[in-house]
Image 1: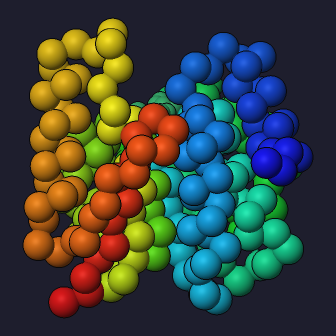
Image 2 (image 1 turned 90 degrees about the vertical axis):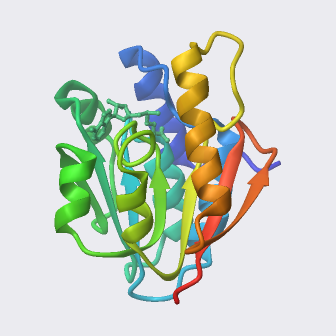
Length: 189
Ligand SMILES: C[S@@+](CC[C@H](N)C(=O)[O-])C[C@H]1O[C@@H](n2cnc3c(N)ncnc32)[C@H](O)[C@@H]1O
């Protein structure tokens, strides 16, 4: 397999130095990259939960050298957002600090959403789905339960999984990739 893009390597190293343990795994990053490359001009990408910027880096690297797609990403924790901000981002990446649900209310709709924060995934998933453009793609990872998850985490994951697989607005598939992914497309009807 190809080596990770330089931006991903740099973001991963910054995450490691900062002790940030929640970055997406490479298998999920590569899936995001594939989907990002597929986006036509003027499409909009949203990531909920920037973390240290590793997922953002997979998406942004895949889009280079294009400049016709925008990538907005939001992180609630200012210290984590500051780690992500140290990366050398292309101009089309818009890093925001704030609450994902607040942003979902204000930024309109998107063609690819990576819902990777508790807000917009465990809470407010309905608002994330509503923010998809017709035929928009939604990626949700960490769908495979981990041995150390609490009952509450298992219950929440189960609720998210059920919603994604049964919501009539979506067509969804579970993919045994990385931490476990559900990929959904908005029917646009
Ligand atoms: C799983 S990590 C994100 C990893 C990142 N997407 C990646 O691919 O490397 C989840 C992040 O969501 C952030 N977060 C928690 N609550 C949030 C909220 N209400 N709005 C935005 N981000 C939030 C956490 O601080 C954490 O950095």
